[in-house]
Amino acid sequence: MSESSHLLPAVSSFLSSPKQLLIDGEWVEAKDGRTFATVNPATEKELVQVSRASVVDADRAVSAARNAFEPGSAWSRMTPRDRSHLLWRVGDMIDERAEEFAQLESLDNGKSIASARGDVGVAAELFRYFAGWATKMEGTTIPMSVPGRDFHAYTRREAIGVVAGIVPWNFPLTMAAFKVIPSITAGNTIVLKPAEQTPLTALRLGELLLEAGLPAGVVNVLPGFGDAGAALVDHSGVDKVAFTGSTEVGKKIAAGASKNLKKVSLELGGKAPNIIFADADLDAAIAGAALAGYFNEGQCCVNGSRLYVQREVFDQVVDGVAAAARAIKVGDAFDPATTMGPLVSAEQHEKVMGYVRGALADGATLAAGSPDPAADRGYFFSPTLITDVTEQMAVQTDEIFGPVITAVPFDSEDEVVAAANNTVYGLAAGVWSRDLGTAHRVGSKLRAGTVWLNTWHADDVTLPRGGYKQSGWGRELGSFGLDDYTELKTVIAELR
Image (tube, rainbow, N blue to C red; front, side, top):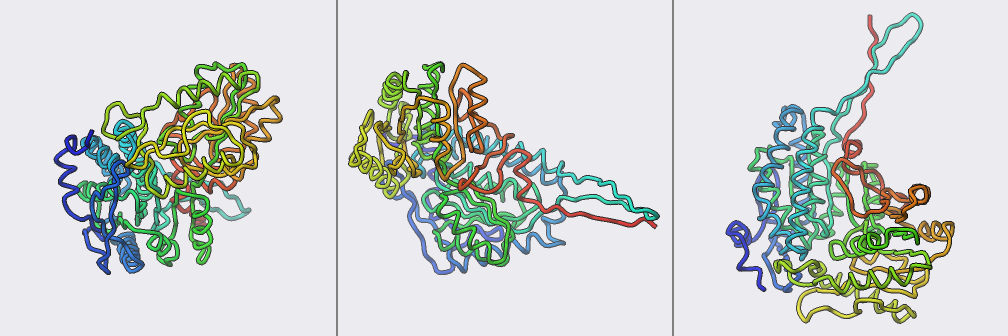
């Protein structure tokens, strides 16, 4: 089934011309005139040419963001209430154009249209949730006493300045919202660098923000490659870098930002353990394990890719997850029957196949799936379950970012906790047990930023997310998500 017959006129219109950079409220070509193609991963065909930002363009965008932030600018004169109203308005505008955003996301990323619709709904809700916080970033009064002298001491929450937001390709619109929304809620300005694989919804969001009345220069959008992102990290005019992506790139960003000690928040890789005890509700645990591992084509940093199952129910759970994997309909995003689309790119497709082939060469066994492409055209890959793995295999230690689950039996609680924590990552984890004491006790021992008990992927915009160890620095979302976008100022006044 071709997606072209399903495209909204607004989507076709958006794709009808090359996409430009958003700098200082204007759509402009890259200074050197370079463009790149963004590709539909289901068909491997070009969607549109996009302007490719360079180091020079990064400097232009940072200058625009700096000017928009300075005292006396239109943005600096907007009150918290003004920002709140603007954020709420954008949320409503996204809802009004939800199908347009979902179609663009599916075309650019490959995920099913149903999944893309869910992502768009989250983005809209994020704007409305943070709209409430724009007027509630309050300081505190602090008692201060010195004999014979009177003081009034208090704290203020203030915007940091210019933020560089660098986002990945697995949830393009949602991840853009994760950076843009807290930035402008707190009164910062931002230069957003979307992933080169998936720039389209970030560019459409830029159009929407201007339409909503955001002053020029507050949000700038720079589609491009790693050189543009590195230029933002190195730029002396950037006060904070907010990055979501791989741990490898996160380390480079932390090193680059250290040159002038700009603030950094990082949500990085994961290799989440999912633990099923023998007393669990096995029907729910099997369905949860399949969701944990195969959600979003497996391209999700909190997916439960390491499945640990108590030995007496290991075969039953493996059979159940394998059956669930085989039942997943892999196909084009616009086919209503599709539950899993393609991987995002040829590079990612080759990477995932390489891990599976490597595991088989090392002696692992396929319980479901294949080490080969799932279609002749497009970056499709079958949901895969692998057994007979060791803790030393790359498929068990590395973040694969594809629909691949490894299953390992365990005997004791101490054994599985040690295995689950035996990773450089610490983003998410899960425990399944009817005994709530066991679930909470084991959950408390797992070194991860989010721990699910008898569920997986249950989430809400009010809840913070982030990781332990090499899964990142800081937290996003919830009231905690504003901490990394503000400075805390202490004011001490002597009363005379």
